[in-house]
Length: 266
Ligand SMILES: O=P(O)(O)OC[C@@H](O)[C@@H](O)c1c[nH]c2ccccc12
Image (cartoon, rainbow, N blue to C red; front, side, top):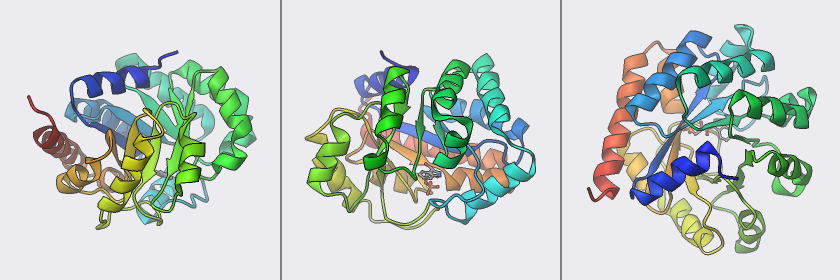
């Protein structure tokens, strides 16, 4: 069954345009800002929103998203409130929504219940960075039953054998991590993950989205060469946390324009 996410990616591909996924931590600095950021990011050119579910020990995150997580948790963020945020978003937007969270939160809530409740609220899939493919069989089964995407990961270190194993059954998109560090804007040579993406293409037609480190329109263009989409988190979250809302939206607009200028013929 095609999700909102699949439809959006197919439309982007048909139009020859690269996708932009914008990561926003739910409730950072507050719920009103999260809702407004989703609405305005879509207007600025975001195709997908990755909604971060804050966790106290976010091992894959650098300082910017760690701070946002702490802020959201201090502000009283809970799984119930996150569900309410998703429902609220669905009152004004049909933008594909992918959750990003750590296993602990989901297992505590009950994974199947989590998937069912977030799906019913209007979410289209999730990213769970601390559960490797070898251990995600049960999660994959539950997600497949609910037509809910569970992102697979590839990194510069992924071997062709593992790539085949993880990519062949992947639905939604494959998260292509540009480097082996944590999230956060930094200078990265995107040709390394680019080669990995080109290899992955021979195993799968599932969209490839490159993330980690992207902080400028130029970096977005470099990261997108062999991918279908780019994922931008810390650059936007950092601005939202500093109260630079308009600046965050201007960055998304600039990335949209740069990607369209570089890759879109018309
Ligand atoms: O912040 P960056 O470097 O732009 O990277 C994207 C990222 O924020 C988002 O996809 C994300 C936030 N937390 C994560 C944890 C694991 C994987 C991915 C993520």
